[in-house]
Length: 220
Image 1 (cartoon, rainbow, N blue to C red):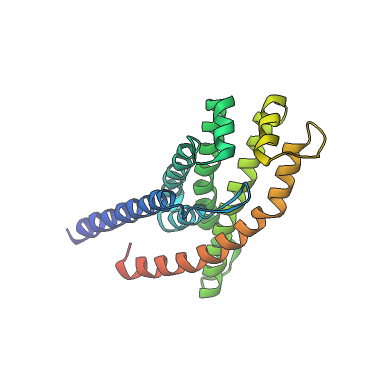
Image 2: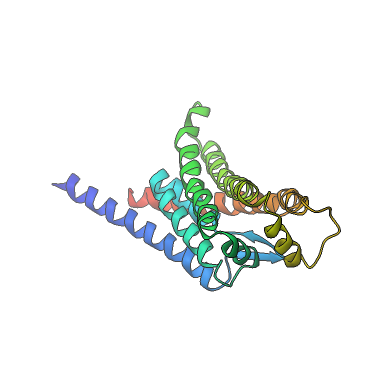
């Protein structure tokens, strides 16, 4: 009887955490706390709550939160994000895939990295746990950046009309025709991709540590 009640209590608490993290993603989006804008570049912090959920709730929970992240990203394509608006004008289906697939995989990959990274360590310790949190957080950031930019190039890299619109979005460019989008991707990887990775790893590790300590006290 006690085991059944404990299982129900644990399930309820996990669902509550999932709901809270999903709400945090939505609130961050509505209050413009989800991105740091640097010109047309945007550094997202939404991979952090996804990584937190992936570690605390497992890959499935991470994937659900990633889907929420993706839906908010797609919603921003309707007037809140210049690049998203441009993609939506050219191909709504591609835009939805670019917004959704990388973000769902952010949750899955970071969750599995945490789940199986214990095999890298001989025994559990505070140091090894922090390293696992950091690995999961870093995976979330890298997955988001690499897959988003990779799909952007795959779907729109050879579209001359899209590139013309992209050049206009940039305010003009001296780069040869056909190379602007690739140059943007390279620059993004070397600038905001690194910042995202550092921010997500540091903040994610610290927050996950607090969440996991609370979960242990609550026996989740």
